[in-house]
Image (tube, rainbow, N blue to C red):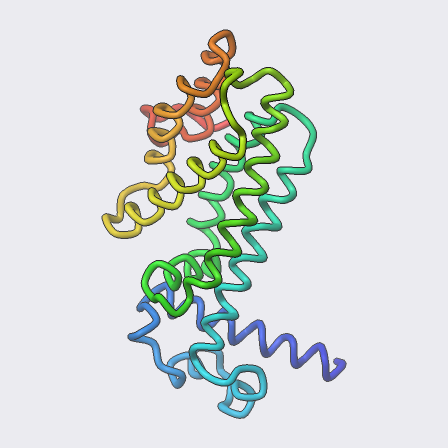
Length: 217
């Protein structure tokens, strides 16, 4: 096995171990020794890749950013209805957050520790850009009301989505049902009236947990 490949494996194992512990216990309650034990790694290997716990935590946040924006970018480049793709993005990013420990840990680090919030601005900008692109497509496809501004709506959407992440993290409520409620509130004000019933049905199907057990698409 090439030395460079082994080195990258070690780095990724440290990131994963740190993410699992940050997600479970938080940054302040996780020590370097905890991470080394969990990763079955040595201090030498750790300090070869990272200057310390904070740098390792930044790597977790950066990996979360990479995973999140790669997923968003894939959907943003797909063909089809701009608004349907945005509804899918809403649900699929929620699933990524719920099921991928690095994504979950990265979000927790940003929410709980001001030292990592600089990374959040890059994530926010990338996310707004992807959402604005889908909304611009939806505008061109006459899915939105004529007076809706895609860039402004993208910022509102990202802000609302982020707020729901904070609330569900704090209160341990279901993320997907809360997103369903967000769409119930947003859609009537932004969707062309002739298409509202269609997109409301799409939102309810994709965010089924909030609407009496409707099965997802």
